[in-house]
Length: 214
Image (cartoon, rainbow, N blue to C red):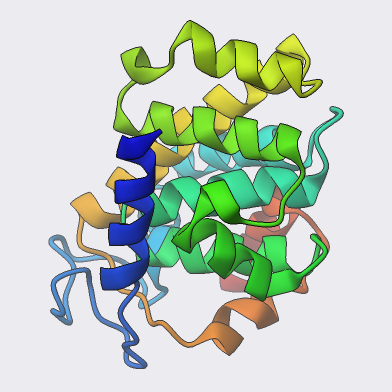
């Protein structure tokens, strides 16, 4: 728990930056590869490889919008929290905006979770699941029996524990995909809030974007 408290404090103190222009994680203005559009973050990568974009969008759709007892806001919060721990600006801002319109407390709550999870005003079960997600972000073997037992004591089901681990693992992949190719992002909250108000879902929104481009 001490490790997590230190990590959360560091997370709040040094991140995210507040760049209004579109830049990569190092402040540069070009990605590592030549993309086919000027769309930011993972959206530009999806446009670059539509064949990989479709299954990745489908995975996001199932993890964040599929059937299950975790609410969509809770799932988006897990995705945003892991992305913040990975310092992935595009993924953090995107999923924080999705979570903010679906959880009580909005962006203020998300900032509290990112800054100080142990003292954030979230339900005990969700807090235990977020602690599991943080452990996954550090490495799969960091998840201990005590993490799982703590979540179960607060009422988490096996499916909820499974889905939390998978969301956290998947977003480590997405985050590394986005930043490993130095894609661009800005830190203007309204840029992300506008997209968060879309209701078609990840797959539908992506297919609409493809149709518009044709």
